[in-house]
Length: 113
View 1 (tube, rainbow, N blue to C red):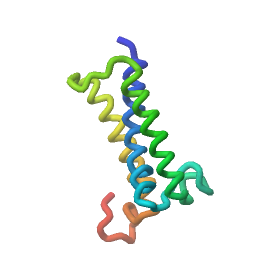
View 2: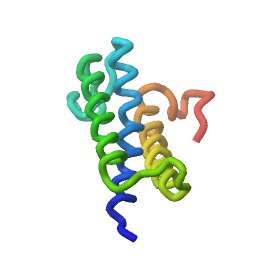
View 3: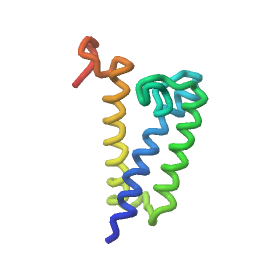
């Protein structure tokens, strides 16, 4: 069993997950944190930058998921690896972006964790 396809599908899930907030913010015309802002990951980039960054993440996720190995949606193992990438990236993003949008603020009475 080779590990390269599994690593690729894991990171494909992470890239596809990262594409969502950037792409959605971009097409909604809203600024959002990105690696290109100052300071990186904390400042906000324009909606255009975020739309393009979301598209780039979609493209990388597609390549990692569909062009490396033979990903099979009916294979439980394949889907679990993809799902782990999605869960870990979404949790990390929730904690990181929550600092800026009130999701992890101790002063927010609705915040959990």
